Length: 343
Picture (tube, rainbow, N blue to C red):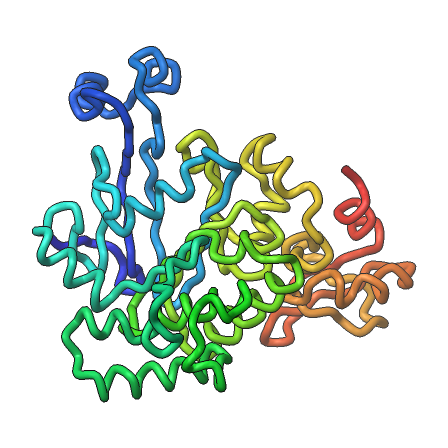
């Protein structure tokens, strides 16, 4: 079954439900696939994911976040079909994964999906090289080829010199690097990560985030990344999907979430966000007003952190230009103060 999504959409989820409890499918149908929270609770059913629709674009890092029990990890498992959704469609390259055979799904997982979880799941009796090459062994690739590929990945994830170490001889961060290398062995089209760094110490976690960004710059994967940490979501993601009680509350760039929160829940999530690093001049400028031409313009795509001081020192509004150098608006210090310092 083919999807009509735009060409740049790698994954498209449509009206996905994941309910836990006896008679969940029947219950959903009886309520015309639109039960509310109270109806679900009264039926003794748990709403893990409730009517979620979202897309993941080519080369995008989509962060799915929320508090414990929000449904973020359940949603990831629905996308990968580790959990069969109670209802809904999950398109991968235009193919609805909910409609294909188990054998077809296994082949897609083996060849097109890479997965990294919070718990490393390394094979304790196998070396770094053997752990990384394991997915290729499952595919039936000959030993020489898979070990050669594993050696390349050892270099990529920064474990050169530790090829023959066993997991017990590695730190937590090093073990997670092995897990990342193993997930990349099949050269997946899409990379799924479920809180991969949350069990690590803060310094190691920062190091792994840096490593993750370096790898993405090199590999340009389409990525679905689950986290409960908004700072991590901001640092790593192109867009962020915030979930609560199984619902998708809002999805958008970090700038959009900060400047246009959908409700109080999202607003509480982003209240401590580094606004100066996230909000662009173009988002808060006064369009169509040229400002004082005696001042050097600022670019509309500049973040406030980079230009706030200059604007604050100006007694008049500063012109704002687009990428073509055309004046498209202005911004003044009163606007900066309101956005950055007023609740």
